[in-house]
Length: 163
Image (cartoon, rainbow, N blue to C red; front, top):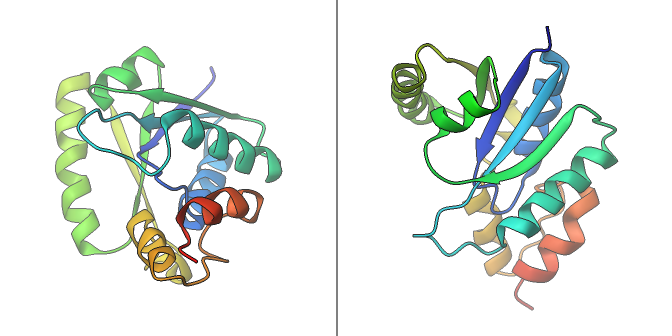
């Protein structure tokens, strides 16, 4: 039986930390469905289509063949059920992330009738990286090399870095 997991987030933009989670998850499951959150109440820097394309490009460049990327809105628990996934994979950088993610995992387990959440701790060298950090560094003209996957650096830098 194929074991599918969902890796969800807004990924605005997709960072090297996200890429690390995707790569590690791809080694644990037969298939990873990357669920790109489309939240109509937020104005992202990149459209859902752009984020989906960037993640697909980064996965392909890394040689990850067991990845599917698509947008979703609504409840993650419902999305996981439609994908017939056995788990959600979430990255945690620190105790604050863990506290939030455990509450979300409990809610998703309740809503889905038993879905598991797998927590992967961030590698130490990526523990400070978030999409917000990348956007802030870029807004102040700082180089974001090493914070986003090389394969999509140019796309992200052209949009975010103030010259």
